[in-house]
Image (cartoon, rainbow, N blue to C red; front, side, top):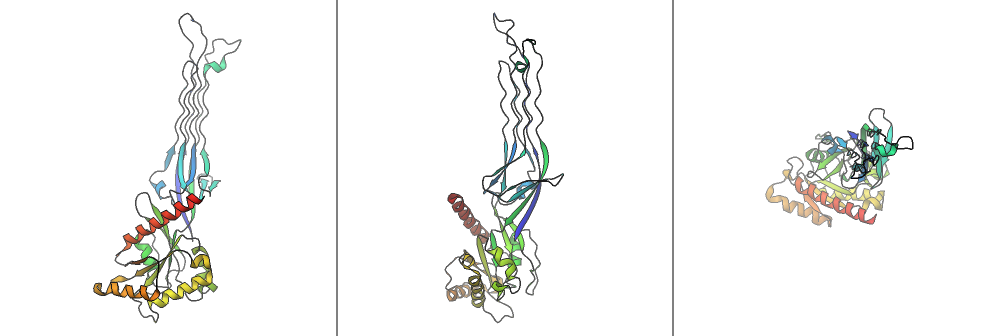
Length: 344
């Protein structure tokens, strides 16, 4: 269930500002002595764990991050301004490695945690620093040192935000293929998914979430039957469950209502943390039902289940209803994250 997203970036800290050699020259003070100021320190580059992003996809388009150079020193013992730091937002759970050596630099696991990845250069010294009893007119000054530059590899170990739940052949793989770049195997027979597949769903330019396609649940999954045990322990860590139901099961003795109740029973056997998790009913394969019969058919399923939560009608095959579903998921996840952030 862990989603591994990788990106390589280059970070360049700012160089230190140079010192300067100047002398005080005022009326009636022809030999006022040295007054060259120091330069400013270069800015540093920090990675900051934030809740505003949850993937590394944006680093594919913005891979170089630079901090500001320190300002040079000035006369009258004026010190140059320090360069501004560069704060690079990354998701919580980001591992940072040196791309050249593979050395682990840090692991950002807490919201707001900072990691220094490139230190800014040290400021140069003005000639005022070099005056002494034997050197009354120093001409020396020093230049600022160079800021660190390095290539980093970021690796995100992320638990999926949303898990797809349903019997084999309910259309979970077709759904994740339709809304993300993930390409799980799809076929007209059950158990085509043998391991979890994850895809990043981009709702707009700034918002996205991770969707997990999980192997189908069978009876006894809570006790380890089939692949249930391998994914149910991770499913409890998602923020939302989408319960996909085939409203027109082909060559199946189970009705859509019976399939929902079977999986609900497995969730209850697993534990309250999973059974009480937010779960939405998604009625899939609406393209198999006549338009004039669709609403009545879906309403009958919902009524027989006495379903109290949100209900969506979609067709993963022709992508009907997917946009509304994805936006609703994003809004629900945003509310969850805001609540979590406030409680912390």
